[in-house]
Image (cartoon, rainbow, N blue to C red; front, side, top):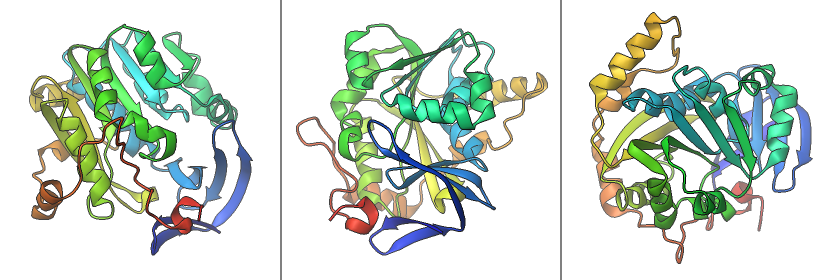
Length: 299
């Protein structure tokens, strides 16, 4: 039995068996086998993906911005050590460069060994992986990309510095004309401070956002995804590109553009109006800073 605490008094249990427990140079890692979801990946006790619904997660995080861009030829993935963002990106034949910058080689090596689909996608000649702190890499490399996917753990510990206004400005400077940043942005009911802080920090840099609200079964909750850019988004373009992809024989089985047409609920509007702040390098937001040992694993 695997238990994950979501808040101080709410969590999930997964019945099954642990297939692997260990540590990389940066974090603990566990692969857990469950009848409903198949294998689940936990990093520092927090669920990252399940084999059963990872496509739902990555099609909104990766495929959506690639479909929304006028003509994406390059994508930079920040984080994404499980490599399922790469697995999603290689489906797009128009991409010429797929670069992932990930600090933890241990997670990549483990997923390469245990997931056949990852071994296959990493053989694609367009794929390149750099093992380095992503923020430092962005500072040192001035190249630009059409799409930048931020596929990180939630803002806690070292990762909180990749959710600040300064980091988003750095990302903005690495996007080409019409470039799109894509990021997952939490649950507004369970984590209103995190949800509102990410939103307010993004809008302090990017004037245009597009939001999807999606059920994530393995998380046991709804989850949100946002695209951010300097120009307005065209839903007709996204829908047109998706239809063309389907005609070419590649269906995104867990994705529909209609999720981007949903209007915010009154509860969500209240959260955005009354909660959160802009996260900065001087005062970064930490999602789990005030949660008890059940959630963080620390007293």
